[in-house]
Length: 224
Image: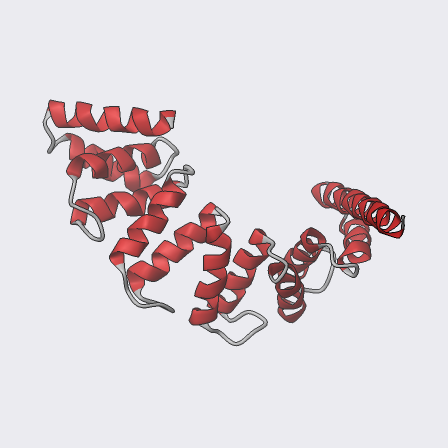
């Protein structure tokens, strides 16, 4: 009986936390920062990771509070260690830029990896950048291409552009102009001007059959 009662209390508290968090999100969306702050602080102190992450954003951007990078790092850290992917990503950016904490690219990579492993496309993009540049981690074009592809498959236009360049140059992947054209096209279709310029250049250099093959690849990619 005690175990059942305890389990019911957990459900009740979790439900209450969720409601408080959602009210905070609604207030934030309406730019009622004072109200959002109250809702988030109420449950963040109880360990609600999403509220902790939202508080981190508020302090990082100075929304309804005095901008305070150290407090932002504090809240991001609490949420990140609980597995919140967005907090992990934001914390990685803080370490990457040295905001509220000493700049540490190795630690930034660690948190990008945590968020990327959970499928966060922006984290996958940043992780691809780190492997491509060798900043905070050993340079590895194959790993860079793999992370770019994961983000690109989630329609991240910048990742699609960088993956196209990897295929164009044969870095980390087998060189393929058809694949490069395909990813340039998908990125351009989302409004990426650099990708559009590269796609248009390819159209003057590839045969009509090569372009048709690449467009087929793009259609198959979108269908997945």
